[in-house]
Length: 269
Image (cartoon, rainbow, N blue to C red):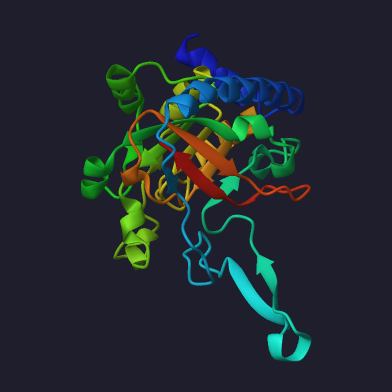
């Protein structure tokens, strides 16, 4: 399929009926990913790498507000056990974006096919370029270079960007530049259009957003998610995962009507 056709198809998915069709196609891709994950698991060493940041109210968020707050509800000395009342924003910490996040009738996080949350993990490394350009993006050439080095990207895979940004966590530069403007790497829409054509189920980043910090239109969010696919933001530990050969386990939450939510992401190598 030509790139122009893919782009036109993505635009069409923003319409209600086409979005439903895209969700069904996405579910099929997720199912294929579950099948292709099994051989990788059979060949793995069983070593587990946590790709999830520990998270509290100080963790950076897109809007700058605390993503989680704690209120004691039960105290050990008073009640005999301990319990927190939590107030959580869905899109904080290491978290998943469901199709519903950027579409009116896309799948909510509880509706994602669980078989598609166990999938081959493909890591595209742009850390060298991101060190020079804080708004660097994954380009189609990066996808093609990965294929040249590792072979075809499996349908149903999770493709993650390693920009080295996770090492900045705790410093303001994780979120903004010296002038206070958003600045962090992400995917380019031409790259995600190409990945959609390949039947990829999800994309992930080690930054605050699937789109780069200087994006003015959330082009990747608006094209990727309504097609029935998911995204993961604020990944950790991608420097410890090989470019190919690992299997990802996406521990997505299951609250109804959820546009996403904090997730535990593990890789088995």
